[in-house]
Image (cartoon, rainbow, N blue to C red; front, side, top):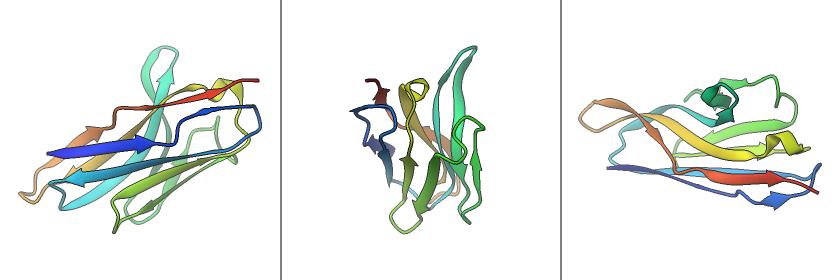
Length: 120
């Protein structure tokens, strides 16, 4: 009923930039928080960056100053601008959204993931 479709992953060299996109579609009344996650040692996934509906952002220490998260509430879309990429940023990046349905049921949704590889 709800789909999150990510795009933008690629193979790039260290220092390059990428922009990930995630578009939500389906039975959506409104979207609360949106975020990007990636796998981490000892964890299933770690939060990379998140943004509230009002635009309040959070960044993991590892990406502060290099990544920027933004969203368009009218388009149900969130982006992750990734600059100065490092090899340790290599991962599958997953989009997450907490969505309120038209029947006022709130649920967590995940995208299928997009691969980012940073290598020379």
